[in-house]
Length: 400
Image 1 (cartoon, rainbow, N blue to C red):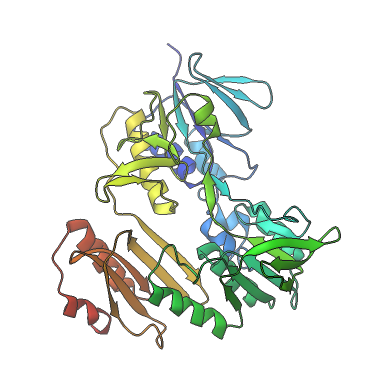
Image 2 (spheres, rainbow, N blue to C red):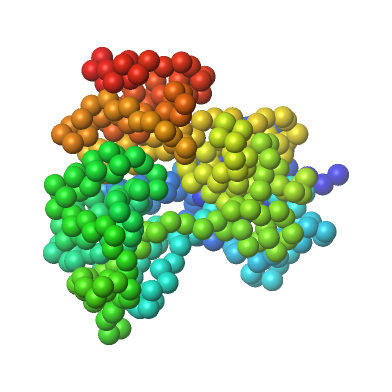
């Protein structure tokens, strides 16, 4: 009897973890890890931070070494998958080859949402998702250059901090009324707005991009209303879209991501999915959610590997995230969707460390902890175990 083959499409955090976890769970057959980038899987969060700032190399960002993959008999394959043939049980590759599988894992991730304004295809307009993206941005940066960042979310603000460290003039354009509006309370938005302004970033809220203009290269960003902002380079960070085209074309159920159950199974029993491309119903929040988070990708990958090996395991960990900007570390526990009250520990208008606790009907559901690792660990435990909380205790948490 020939060895079974597990194919993993996508070599980001989820794909790399899934490959390693398959061996840990006892998979003895072949493992092929298919990626569109030629590099071995690497850590993506530092791309907008240490890697952009030139403080680390791609080799140093490798999740695991080449020796690890060789020892574990994991075959990295640099290729593009063009189709899944579920009835034949194989993948069609761009090379024209058909690669059979017994079990398939989709870890196709997400791609940056494109800016639709006229001129968005000019040279000098960049997106930040891969190491190659960052290398192009770095080649275009020089002290004194004027960078315009479209989008005041985490990627935009992290990039702003890195570019300021490189000596660029930085303007951040946010379409809504405040930075981080979709993900944080007004007090947290105001804190990061203050920090970036103190570091010389020009933040413009309510700024809608009408067009980008220049000859062959972008020279300015034109706002709705007619104002122009000079730009030597433009970086767009307006969110991501899940890569679900392969799954949809193969007839798998897709709903803002490849739909998976709590064991990461798709609508096909032989196919699992994990990471930024996967959408699952979280009982804790009572809705279907697609998480863009390295910790969640890692957990889903471990569950997927167990599922492939026939071992029951469920997605259960509390979602958490982080963001590094300047010398600040923001750690986020839980999802704040539906909060009806915030409790602050520390003063975000003055301090450089504080915590914003999010409550719903008196229960702690999330926390944004800035330079407060103890508050982060406390919050994760309280939310996970649904422990009762004392508001006065929360206010005093950081002074312990």
